[in-house]
Amino acid sequence: MTKQSDTPRVPDLMEAVFDTCYLLFDLIAGILFFAFSHGSPLFLLYGILTWTLCFGDAFHLVPRVLRAVKGSNEKIERQLGIGLQISSITMTVFYILLLYIWKQTFYEMTAPVMLEILIWVSAAIRIVVCMLPQNNWCGEEGNRKLSVIRNAVFAVTGICVIVLYVMSGNTYGYHMTRMAAAIVVSFGCYLPVTLLSKKMPKIGMLMIPKTCAYVWMIVMGLQLLF
Image (cartoon, rainbow, N blue to C red; front, top):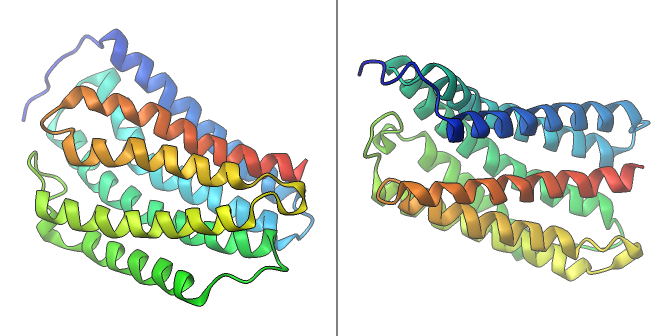
């Protein structure tokens, strides 16, 4: 594959700015969690959660920023593919961390055993599927069958975490049902993109509200911190 263009397009540059601001927000938010946690397991977990999101997404977003500025070439396209694989795995870890954040936030409540098992099993299956070379992460077509499988089990993980945050409701006045709403938004935007974007590229615009939903989740943690 040769370099496609030396002239960056305005929409691509806008996306690059958005992605850069998002990664910087995550980086700074993670620093704040660690700096002001005072050893609190809850906010240390929020810090780990935030940096897991930041560094995982960076593997995919940094190549996108470079592509927007410099144009596409074989090296960048390969980095994008590998970045997608890494971010798919770290995104799964993100939801496992949300489980433990729920446990630390609502320490007087107990997660249903079957719900917790479902979160772990579905997350483990997704990670294993993501690691299979048959996914063809660096190819233009990918592997639709494995894409459906890995995102179906990911949806199970997300639904189980949503149930937890709905269960806790407004306990302690934290209004953490907003976390459930943010997860619904993120999945509602992410799943159509990952399943349909190769045939309908414009649907990729849904990644903007999906990213904003993740920012919202981090902001909820910052509100508890401060």
